[in-house]
Amino acid sequence: MAAIAEAAALIRGGGCVAVPTETVYGLAANACDSRAVAGIYEAKGRPSFNPLIVHVPDLGAAEIIALFDDAARALAQRFWPGPLTLVLPVRPEARIASLVTAGLDTIAIRVPDHRAMQALLDASGVPLAAPSANASGGISPTRAEHVAKSLAGRIPLVIDDGPTSAGIESTIVMGNVILRPGPLSRADLFPCEGRVPELPSVSSGDSGPLPAQGNKGIAAPGQLDSHYAPAKPLRLGATVRREGEWLIGFGAVPGDDTLSLRGDLVEAAANLFDALHRGDASEADAIAVAPVPESGIGLAINDRLRRAAFPK
Ligand code: TXA
Ligand code: MG
Image (tube, rainbow, N blue to C red; front, side):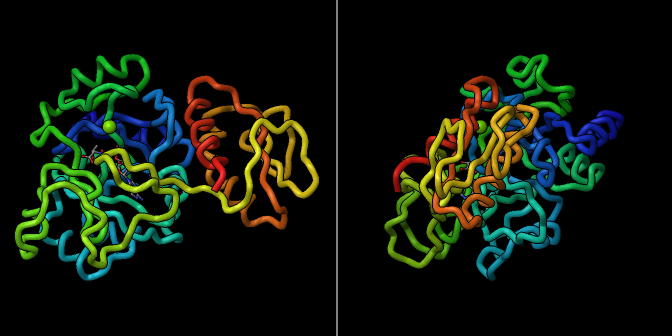
């Protein structure tokens, strides 16, 4: 299919393209390329960063990126390819962009059951980060026309392979906790458990791994708010370095490090979590970040910076 070859070339060139999966249409980019992933956020006009789901062709490819225990492997063998996303420890050597994981040490990963997405994974040869292919605040697209309408002029290509079959986003599972309900129910996933409530529960008392740092609990399905926050105090809007600080610059504000020397917001988004990690790892007692314009993807950068600066 010519569209797949064209899409794969765009992906390899650092672009993003819309592609159907069995759940919803996704906006896909190379998960190992921070700038490409930042491009997803820019196209969606998303005012905040959430960790994204990474799509791979099969379990073998997933095991190269994430660390599976026996229970996770059993779920994968039973439900992949399919609408199941597993949250697992990420292997650092897999070189997944930190913007994909929002700086966390876990990753959400799945093997999609759709010929177009599978063909794109095969032709591009890279893991694909892909949230739903709609503008921020819009509803998830289940047809190519929905994508075209929502993201008109913002993305170079939509692969049209008809309506999606499941129509809602994949079920997300971490250990034995359902982080986001989806096409696969608790009874489908954990049939041996007996009758338990369908909705996510973190207080079930058994030993599933709890979400990583930065969560404010899992009150509302799909509203999971995990992201990396530095251990050190963080000062925003800094134009000069104060005593004991590690200054992360932007544009004309120089620093020990910079989000983007040329003041490019897409580049700044791509560098954000790595820069925070470097500040945390430095000798300094505190981190300061230069002002970032409140426009375009700058909104998402500032949203994350404000959350990261919130007193711990
Ligand atoms: O069906 C789907 O899953 C669609 C299609 C395109 O595959 N994709 C999708 O992706 O919905 P996305 O990136 O929008 O879903 C991200 C969800 C968010 O709720 C996010 O909080 C959660 O996955 N998530 C991602 N990484 C996580 C992590 N390390 N820990 C906990 N939750 C994570
Ligand atoms: Mg969405």
